[in-house]
Image 1 (spheres, rainbow, N blue to C red):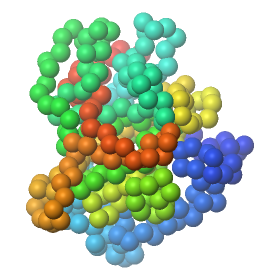
Image 2 (image 1 turned 135 degrees about the vertical axis):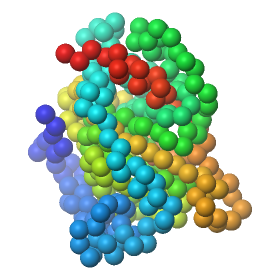
Image 3 (image 1 turned 180 degrees about the vertical axis):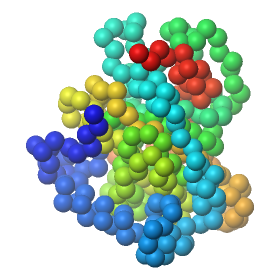
Image 4 (image 1 turned 90 degrees about the vertical axis):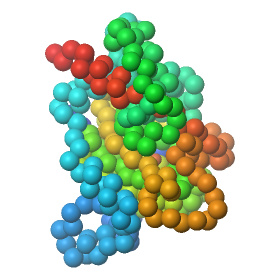
Length: 302
Ligand SMILES: [Fe+2]
């Protein structure tokens, strides 16, 4: 079953520990900071006056996105089918589509353990694997390319993203399955100050705008099996977290801020894990939701 706590012998190993490079004491402090941050990095139904006050200054555009996402859930069979498609396989032939994509991504870039980005509109770079490996008999070839405004992200246990910025977009990160740790940073820099840490569970929603909480790192703290996470790590369990992301460009938020720069969701900046320099990734997705949904529906659940 799910184990979100690191093993006792991993505690307090300090700054060398991936993904956040913090000690247990710093983690406690950063969780407290996250819980006290103003405006609240989490959107939810306040249960105290304090919580209400901390949510007061959350911008209306992201409140609206959160409200629209509030009832989204993955169904139990979808979660189970994702688990099957992510599970380590004994043979190449029996490998699930999601594990196959993870291995391909890890071969291409092993600076951090891979996660999967599923475009809810548009297509994905690995859609073709669904037909090549017998998960589907044909592709419908949906339209679109980079920059899907709505993305499902699948985070295998102990895998994580680099520190990255969502630039000038406004958006939400809505947890759908498992657990996700989010570390917030004050700027896009390897040595950025950590503002606070949150753990999202299903139904919880984090947010960002270009002024606030735009830079973060996401990690799935669940049980990844043998080994310690870090560059090149691939987990050996089928545990995962899943999150639903929405990114609105500046001209889509109905709040016009004209500072003469153009940053949109077609590319996000991040800090490379290997040389700690800034780089840019075009927001290609790995799969399209239309393909993944059909693969999940075809997954035998025994
Ligand atoms: Fe992100």
